[in-house]
Image (tube, rainbow, N blue to C red; front, side, top):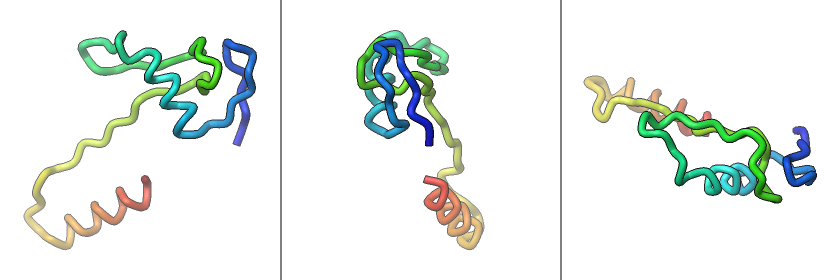
Length: 78
């Protein structure tokens, strides 16, 4: 894990709180197409390199075994 120096000259750990701080500061500027990267936010406690991640899954699967494997894999990844 790397602490990176942000625009406010603070060395920040890559935590969920630091990523949320950066994204919250830029939320009002979200483009209509929904893709946004936040590079070097001026927020003092923000991690300097963050982006949203998306995961598209089916709502229903024909085979329960497939649904279970997908759910288990996504849970493991998160």
